[in-house]
Image (cartoon, rainbow, N blue to C red; front, side):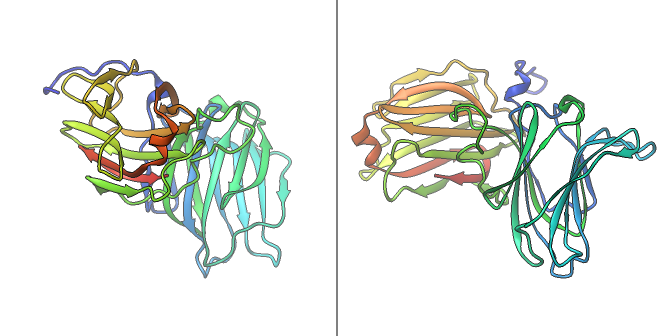
Length: 314
């Protein structure tokens, strides 16, 4: 892409906010595009051994200091009692509403955690370390939320902003394939073993950031003979995304090209009988055919190109 060349317009739903690693608390950041149903925020961290009281995660309607902004969802784990619990509430017009309390908090001093906030149409669901913990019905419009604030006794390792898995029908349960730890960015090429092959229902996740001067990005699946029956390739020269067969045949994928410099991306591959489905940044983009025997013989996921990786999981 030449200097000064304009990017093609991309729907907001295709744009993902990059993760943040090791932010200093208190930490306040803008949520790109605000919150909407189907969005998720993932928080990884550690409760310090010397944590004395509490920490809080606030989904705010603005970031002003005075007057204090409304808080649509206040998530407040407390450790200062013999029975750790969570308080949830809403701040509106400078006044706290009726608080809701959840006991049996599965967080302890000195322990690491993964908290996932899944925002639906009428309520937010929260899981702690992969287990559903609570749900909280909105008291303010979700569309008003544009800021995330983290405060208190907490060491934050990573904050991620994601969309729900489009392969899961509805949004009643936590999307399969998402609650996996982010890692500090690493360069490619990268190889990921698939010792048991792939089976129907299995999801491969690749999350990363496109480098400043990208040339190509490739995700290939290889069998025991190092053949690649199927490859997903993004070409930055002509801004196309395509499936590449073992024999080099190209099948273009009709979708906005979202692999631009310094933009975060997420690739999901769902394996099912007869082939695999593709989603980019939470948007389903169809499928490609592949027989079950070929899927079972796959042994390696290989990623190459002009990207940094934050998560690879199968």
